[in-house]
Image (cartoon, rainbow, N blue to C red; front, side):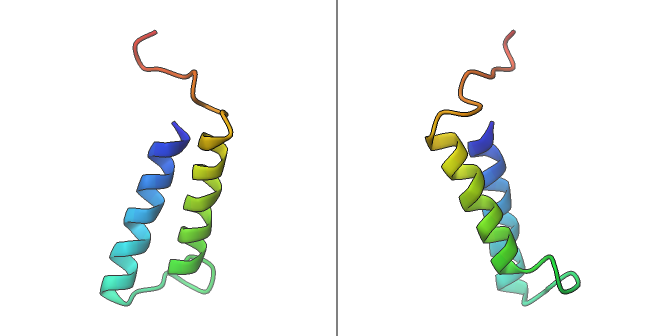
Length: 55
């Protein structure tokens, strides 16, 4: 689940970087990238890997 969130954060950061947009002072390409790296780190450490939609 965290890997999917990381992918979405990275996609949003890519779209913002290509478009040159920033939503306010808080939501920038850098903050989205850091949020994606945080979710990726959680996924690689094992959190959220047991969750499934098939239950």
